[in-house]
Amino acid sequence: MNFSGASSLPDPGGRSDQADLPGLEELRVALRPPELPLPSPRDVLEAAHRVRDLVHAERFRDARALADAFRGRPAVPEDRLALLREALRGAVLMDDAEQVELEAADIVSVLHRSGHPEQAAATVAVLLERGPTRGRSSVATKAVLARAAPEPERSEGSTSAAASSSRRGRRRGERAEVSAELLSVVRGLEQTVLPAAGGPRGGAVDPRRAVVWLRAALTALPAVRPVLLGDPDLELRLRLAQALEAVGDPVGATTQALDVLELVEREEAVVESPLPDPQRTATAAHALLSRTLGLEHPVSAVRHSLDALGALHEVDDPPLRVGLITQLLQALMAAGATDQASFTAGRLASLQRTVQRDALRIGPLLAVAAQRVQAERYEAAWVPLERARRIAGEQRDHRSSLEASRLAASIHERTADHPAALTELHRVASEARWLADDLATAGHERAELVRTELSAHALVLRRALDLGRTTLVHEAAAAIERRTRPEGGRPLLPPELLWDHRVDARVGLLIAIGEALRREDEGVEFAEYESRRRAVLQVIDQVPAGHDARARYWAAYVDDHHARVLADRGQDVPALRAAHRARDGWVHLGNAEDIGRLDELIAQLQAD
Image (spheres, rainbow, N blue to C red):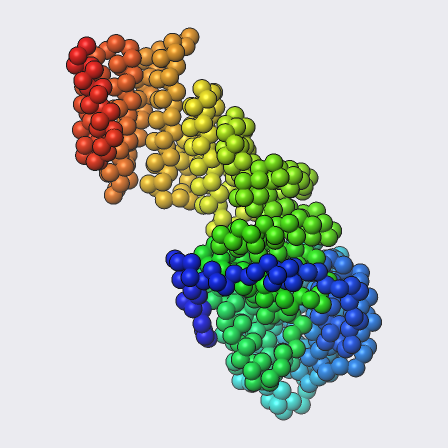
C-alpha cells in the first residue's frame, strides 16, 4: 500500500518553499521545554505513553515503578497490552532477565484472557525463538511463559478463534502450533523490539533481519488480522521505516514514514479524534522524516521536526527533544535559514546539558559547532567542538571523532592555519580508515568511509606538498596506494575513482621528487625522479574503459611538469619535446590557460 511516497515531496531545486520556514517566534514556542512536573497519568493508556517516554529517557527504574503502579488498574486489553510491551522494552534495556520473563508472561496472559489464544501461542513461540533469556535456562524461560496461558491447538487450514475452538482440546504434552502468517506478524511485533541474543545492553536486532521480518509481517497481516488484539499495521510500517533507515535506504524509509502519516490522518478523520497511540507513531514518523529529508528537502525536514516537537509539550524526554532539535538545526542550516539556525543553535547549546548520558550530547555539540563555523564564528565554534571531541574520545566513538576532526580541519583551512589543517586531515583519514575496516560498520557505510579516507589523504598530500613536508607526502601516497591497489580485494568504490586516486598519489610523489631535485636535496637523484615518472605513466595506461579523457589530462599534466623539471636542469632539448607533448594534450582537452602557459615555455626554450 503506497498512498504518497517520496514522489510527493516538493522539488528541492528552487527556493520557492522558503516561505514555509518558521519565524523566530514559532521557533521560540517549539523549543520551549515542558512545564514540570507533568500531570500524573489518568489511565493505563496514558501510563503506557509515560512509561515509553521514561524508557527512552533511560529512566528505567521510574518506568518500572509507573508500570507496576498501573499494572492492576482496570483497562481494556489493548491498553494493558501497550503498557506491558513498554514495560518489557524497559526490562530488556535494563538487561533484567527475570523481569523480561515476567513481563513476557503477563503479555501472554493478557492475550489469552482477552480471547486471542492463537496470538498468545504465537507470542510464546516467538519469544522462545531467541533461546533462553540471558542468565536463565531455556527450561526456566519456557516454564514461565507456559504458566501464563495454555497454548491453543492449531486448526486445519485456519487461524481464527472460531476454528480453533471447534477442536475438543489437545492431549497432554502435545505441542501447539500456529500458522506461519501469524508467526510472521507476531515476530514483527515482538522480536524486532528485543536486542539480538548475546548482544550488549540496549543493543538491537540486525536491521537487515528486521527489514525481512517486518516485510513478511505486513504481507501476512491481512490474513491474520481477525485473530489479533488491535491492528498493528501502523506500528509495523513505522518499524519498517526505521529499519530501512538503519540499512541505508532513506528513500524506502521516507516512503514508509509518509504512508504512516497519511494512514494516521485518514483514521483520525474517520473517528474525528486523535488515535490512542502509545507508540507515538506520528511523532516518530515526523522525527524519521526530519532525518531522511534533511539534505535534499531541508524545508520539509524543518516542518517535520517542528511537527514532532509540537507533540512533546507534555513529554519529559530530554534525549528525544534534544535529538529533534539537532535535526531541526541541521535542516535549517541546509535550507540557508541563517537567523533561525543561529537562534536554534543557541537554545540547543543550553538544552544539551539536560541529557544525562554524555554519549548523547556529542551530536548536538557537533551540530552547534557546525552552525558557528557556517556563521564564521570560528572562536565560538571551538568550545562545543572540543567538548564533543573530548567526550567522543572517552566513549571511543570513532564516528564522532571523525566529524570533529573534519570540522576542525575546516576551521583551520578557513583561517589559513595550514599546518594545523594538515594534522586534522590526517586524523580524518585515520578515523575513516578505522571505521571502514571495522567489522561492526554496516556494509552500506563502508564505501562512503573509504571515499572519505581517500579524499582526506589526497588533501594531506596536496597540503604537505605546499608546505614542503616530503615525509607526509610519502605517507599519504602510500596510504592511497594501499587502499586503491587492484589486488586489494572486492572494491567498494567505482574502479575509475580508485584509479584516479592512484594516479593522483603517484603524481604527488613525482612532484615531491621534482621539488627535491630543484632544491638539490642531499641523496635525491634524477634516476629516482625518472623511476617515479615511469610509474605514473604505467598507472595512467591502466585507465578503466570509458575514461580516456581523464587519462589524457593526467598524461598532459605529467608532460607539463616534466618539461619544467628538465628546463630547470638546463636540459632544453628533451624539455622542448616534453613541452610540445604537453601542449598537444592541452589542445586536445581545450585548456586555453594551459596552452598559453606552454607557449611561453616553448618560446623561452627555443630562444635559449
